[in-house]
Image (tube, rainbow, N blue to C red; front, side):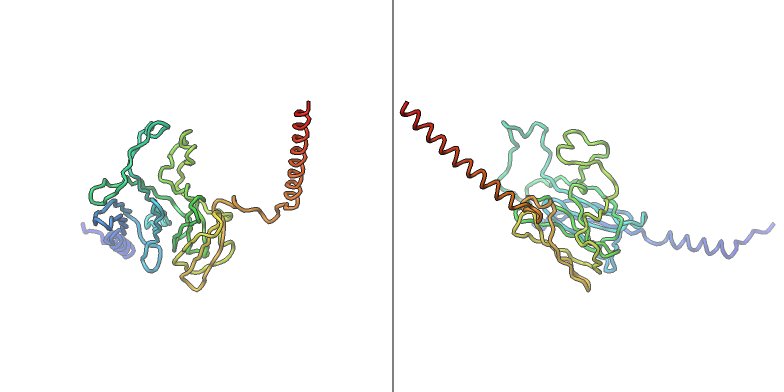
Length: 281
């Protein structure tokens, strides 16, 4: 009884599967390095992570104690945003009150100080990312937002920082978490047309996004460049809380101020006359 030889299609399928299995699985490693001591503060890996850009670069932005980077997941075929936040350590729930506060050191040394506590989480993004930026304001009072340049459609999308918080609970937030502004974790970051500073403009191949403060605290100036297009805009990350809208009724405000001034003068005159009558009585 002779052995059966596989057909041409089966042999080609077997060869394709063997070639796919022989290909190395892309991996992405993110290292946080203390440039003073040279120590690796934290390291995170993504087994199927790869760059989504043609130059094999990973968009990264650093602001305050948080780091955001974008990469393409080879397995899920989607773009993901990784978030790292650095904290000094844990504080007891009764450690901060009117009568007590945690001990703080006035000096810091990379050689002797303990490593920070790092919290990390990943979120899905519906579009490829070519550049990342962050909003900056004059006094840092306005809420910070992440600026994302998408490769498809050439848009500049604003993402609220609260959506990228690694401390977002998996279940329903507790009362204390709601007071901190934490929302329930969602694996996908929504893209809203209301949070698109570029509006309907198509900005090609953006590689850098920079932001600087304006004279008003609520305003920030954003410049996106790198390809054939340059985009510049001004917007308010936390709305215009320190400026009056264009349709504000200034005439009504003036009339109210005049009425208050006349009423104040009248009350002052009446109070003076009453004091004179009381003195002569």
